[in-house]
Amino acid sequence: MSHQPCAIIGIGQTKHKKRRDDVSLPGLVREAAQRALDDAGMNWSDIDAVVLGKAPDPFEGVMMPELSMADALGAAGKPLMRVHTAGSVGGTTAIVAAHLIENGIHERVLTVAYEKQAEGNAQWGLAGGRSGGMGAGGIFAPWMRSYIQHSGAPEDIGWKVAVKDRKNALKNPYAHLQLKDISIEKVKESPMLWEPIHFLESCPSSDGACAMVLTNEDGAKRAPKPPAWVLATAMRSELGQFPGRDPVRPQAGVECAHILYDSAGITDPRAQIDVAEIYVPFSWYEPMWLEGHDIAGPGEGWQMTESGATEITGDFPVNPSGGVLSSNPIGASGMLRFAEAALQVRGAAGEHQVDDATVALGHAYGGAAQYFSMWIVGASLDAVAQNK
Amino acid sequence: MSASLPDETIDPNAPVANMDYFMALEFKETICPVVQRYTDGLLAGKIIGHRCSQCGLVYVPPRGYCPIDVLETTEEDEVELADRGIVTNYTVVTPVQYYGQEATEPFAKVSVLLDEPGGMLSLQDVLEVPVEQVRIGMRLEAVWVPESDRTVEEIGNRSWGSADGCILGWRATGEPDVPPDQFNDRVF
Ligand SMILES: [Zn+2]
Image (cartoon, rainbow over the protein chains, first blue to last red):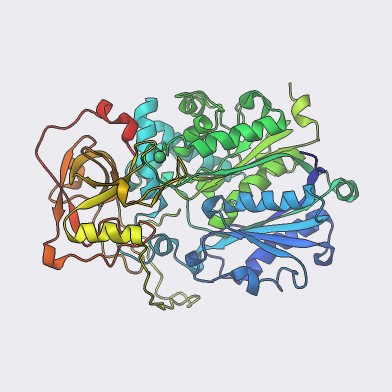
């Protein structure tokens, strides 16, 4: 594919909280966008187009918010595009924005994603207003049980992921949950919400937004700070239910990962990727995606967690930001993974920086584990080749 | 994807920052002919599926196509399915109290692999079995709503409701459990 390189030169996010009553919905999105513009050394008027993503509209009850938000996003008279891919939307939105740069359609694109969960009710939205709604946790719970059974993983793996990500969040001032006294015992003794998932193994409900400014090679040269380079992007999806489907290791996820690795020139993801921000809304999804995206072999994902390989100091750090388990403004959660991957290769992740990170994976999934979006970002255009 | 602690309460002395505003939009979903055959079947006490002539997989509710083979399925592919089967997976849900939620106690939702010719019904309710006794491999049979009381109002084109209004839930048959290795490839 002949295209021009896309650089991430501005990254911004809000402080994620249970409620952001101090800002309106557009105010929340502007807060992240302004920070991304400041980071890029740009003004609203420098932007050519805006690409926005959020989870389904019934979650807040505001239909097609991108239209009423156009003014607040400085998008009046400019192309404004909305992306819809359920929980993976934040990632897909960033990919759509990157494609606009790579194909030379625009030179400077602002991409934003958000959710203001406190102003709506995602549980109600997911249940279609009916009684007996199970939430996403109820849909994913049997798949997690199936993984546990077939992989032979000990039950404390989920608790370990829950503790690790919350400890990482303590290093991230933007993270919603700041659980200073988190422990295995606390996770294990928290209420059982969706067997086998405890309350503290589940993501919170957050208000928050994320934004990035993307540009081409010329724009990157003019940027005040080092860019992150988009080295590969991939999206795949499949039906949420069909006979014979394997929702524990969905085929779309396997194919998405391999297309991504091939496109980035990665032959050994565990060795060639320095850090990964993986969409883990429930603890068991860490080992499930490590295996589901062939970073670990079958039954070996949980061993990576158990051995400490996925800690910030491990050989394959996963979610140094604290991940979805610590902040979950649903629509923004995928973009946060993509943005955190970019922060890492820019060396700008602050206290949760992974040493010498030059190649990073950003990942998001959504729906009934049926939509996948991933990107590989690097500190340079040849970062993968330089990495062993 | 979110969770709230069951004991989270609102401070009655805090200033009002948000107010709930409930509104309703009433609409009637026109049921497509394929789903209509399915709902007609349920009203008559039959579970109808489509079996793809190419791959042999059974779709219930029928979709009118096999997405794997990209093949249309029609009335010629209809099969009457069993109203008995095996629990292949389940979860016990602690109900979150959103507006409209009527459940207050933990409840089980099970995936039922129907006996030959097969087919899978997901998110089914279990009757007369305490949630802690729900298990993989358990044999179940459908408990039908009395014919005169059956309704298909809850069933939509996108599999909403699956058999709600016609099948009340599923109860244990009392037969021995089926070992998981007999259905490991057909869990979901
Ligand atoms: Zn077929």
